[in-house]
Every structure is written in structure tokens, then in C-alpha cells.
Length: 153
Image (cartoon, rainbow, N blue to C red; front, side, top):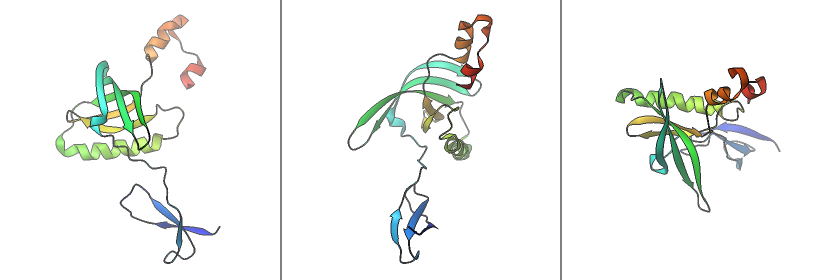
């Protein structure tokens, strides 16, 4: 199949359209992208309780409710609620975080990011929740040292 990639600026999240033949008269063969919007509707996130605090903000245990035509899913997630950002800087911060999230997709050594949201006028990073912390894990080992396999995991 001979095809070419034609840049397209549709309103959907697709970045390209693969057509067969001349781009002006071609037939669409594939229209897809791995790029998904990092935005999460804040109404689909229910904060349960705060589980941590750090230099960038608070971490909350939450439930993320996602739906499609044929299913509903509830995921236990960690929501990193950043310290307040000035109103005129929010768009820039969201764009930078979105770019970072896209770059993290598919990396096995990075916690899977679900997306970004704004809750109570604070930027939130929604990601997988993992029980315990690195400090908890270190406390369980003799001498407080982690093995290389645990560090790489």
C-alpha cells in the first residue's frame, strides 16, 4: 500500500490523516493518533482524603470515574494538587505539564499519568495510586537500603 502522510488541522485530537493516492483526491486509509488529551473533567474526580504534603502541594487519594458508551470504570488515583498559581500563568503551566505528560506516555519507569484537571482553582495532576512510599519501603529493609531491582522497579 503506497500512502503518504498529509498534515491536517482538524478539530479532533488527530494529528494526521494517511491517504492513498494523490493527497487532493485520495481516499482516507487511517486517521488515528496515540495523542490523547491530558484534560480530565473535574466532576469525574472525587477527592477522598489527603495522604501527603510536599514542596509542590498536597497529594490526595481520589476516585476517578470514566465512562464510555458501553462501560463505566472507577479508578483509585493519586491527585497531586499544586500550590495556587497566578490566574494569568495557569494556561502556561497546563501546557507545560501537558507536554511532560505526553513525553511520559509509554515509559515503564514513570508512574502512569491519567491527566490534568483544575479543582478548587488549583492545578491537579491525576496519576496511578501506589500503596506506601519510598520511605516506607526503605524502613522495611535492613539498614534502610533498597536493592537495585526495587529502585529500578
